[in-house]
Length: 385
Image 1 (cartoon, helix red, strand yellow):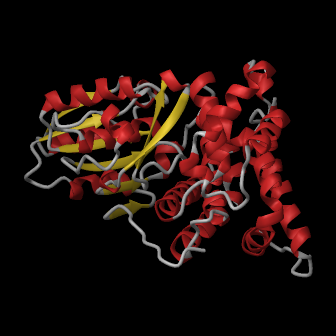
Image 2: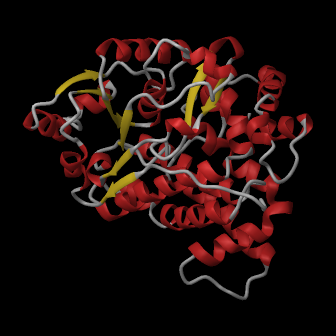
Image 3: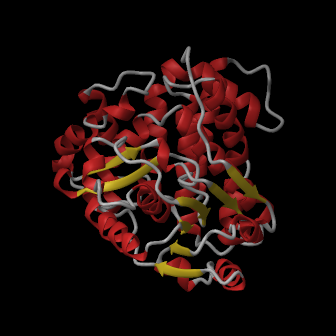
């Protein structure tokens, strides 16, 4: 555990049954123009209707940018940022999943022509906050509303890269379960397991600390005890609100700790094969947890003690650890998320390329409590090929 640690998080967070209406109090009189970042699916589902109504009632001019692709490349992100700069807006509202929020966060620090997204790949700390931002997640989720991270694909490297800059942390966050009520099960499941990975990875990271552990453990409790109900029952609003909170808490944990080998090894799967981020994490979740188990048993036993309702306190550390790993595997199975790269036609001949790309993600691999060698990465990939 780290000796010195810190915590950064959004300044103002609103959550609950009618949290979205708090937008009325967020929009101050000096805001003249807003850009709403979203995507076609969110727009088509009518999820920006309430923000639009509030903006109209306050006579605030607004523009909608809805052409944000899922898991964009840095070129695509730059195109959106350039459109935003032309709008000369003084406030950002992002309504969507991780990709929407990540691009909006980049726009918030790239409102001038001083730097580009490509520049931030090399030096993410160059840019400073230019425009205040509000994040409203429509998945539970990536936790992007809480983090200083923006994930973009780098096609020439067939890899996804995280741009990390504390200036990208949102000024405001709204968590409202109504926005994920009609989320299709495959999306709810994949993003929910992404949040689960954030929590378990941060709790078992070399950078774990009292701040991150507090949020990661609360996230694990909320997610593991609500994810199946939230993803399979459209009317389970309490479970959905708990998932939004759990996803947010896991995102906060990332800001103080960090993800590990699951995310590191999943980035090439998204970068080259365009496997959805949450799905690639789900594929690697159990194999990496089993690989790490020899050095994280005590941590997993603590997770057991916290999250398992009516658990047996007399179980050994080994038994509790194995129970948690089995439970993680069960959650992925019940949610019907693929667990093999064969589903995505990834050939075994690409194994060495995967190993090489995965081992480049040193920013996250150094967080893994058990060292991951190229041979280790190869064996983990072989397990899911």
